[in-house]
Image (spheres, rainbow, N blue to C red):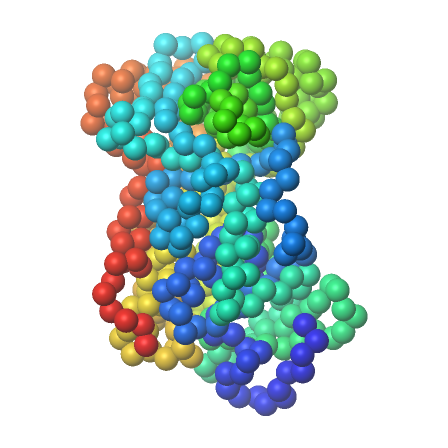
Length: 443
């Protein structure tokens, strides 16, 4: 952060100016950087993260009962395997071998197992802390990835063949440092300060709900079962987590419990004993008695879509581009498919003769968006309608959804189609295949 920057006004490349700058060093930003340097190995990538990264000599995982988790679809697992990371990641991930969907107080229910999926697990649940640390360790090992933490990108200016940006360090009392890149990727979260600074409007839908997050332990092993249960207050999900102890069957699950905003405070303020009692009443005893609950956290639920995801030299990724209701488990998996599609388009452009300076052109970015819009729209519609249908107390909708659940149980093709969408297949495999199997050599 203290290097001198050339005062030249042109966009000549230098050691200090990356080809691609990524604003946001979270799971999406790190995944994108690793894909870029794997598929376009001559490009230089810089990642700017507002918070400090964990120290390099810090243990990759400090086991804790309280961990936020992510459900990875099969396509996301494929991507991490392609990057050579899955073998490490899966040591702290648990396979989903069965998904059970039910409607509390009604007869409608359905289930889908790995036996219905050619013997393959339906996905994996991984703790965010482990996923993030695995990605960070991999990024640190890459010579072409420059990590800058405790640093905010505070200004962007588009020039003829590059984007100029200013980086402000929170570690050092110095003026912002100016840098340049052919492409700046904004991946700084759902409330993205840079998106707002650029005047990019969003489409926003507030659900009037909040998600209560906690880890829960039952008195029976979960055996890789995931549960989606629809209750009066909103959807309730349990995801299977790995055991904290080696060679031990796990009974630990990640809870996502949707609550109306008006009732959130009362739920959060319950004692552990009363919270467990209320939760047990809503879920039942499929995994036995709830033994304990970890720290409870919450956040408001909404859907946000940026009205502009690309401009010349600029692309929005992750929650900065689209933020979805978490109950359908689609947000991070969609973001990874976006990353794969963007990298495939950058690589196609390079193979067609584009220079590094031309990779941020509007033609290249518009091509990416045209190829990925269908996947984004389909996933958003699935997530949004899933909540509207299963979160409604309307008797007609309740009847309709229960008939639908029963129909899926009786009709295997219908069930397979529904769960295929829920597992985020869609265009993902094609995107990954384009990135991973192309025979052309990057120049």
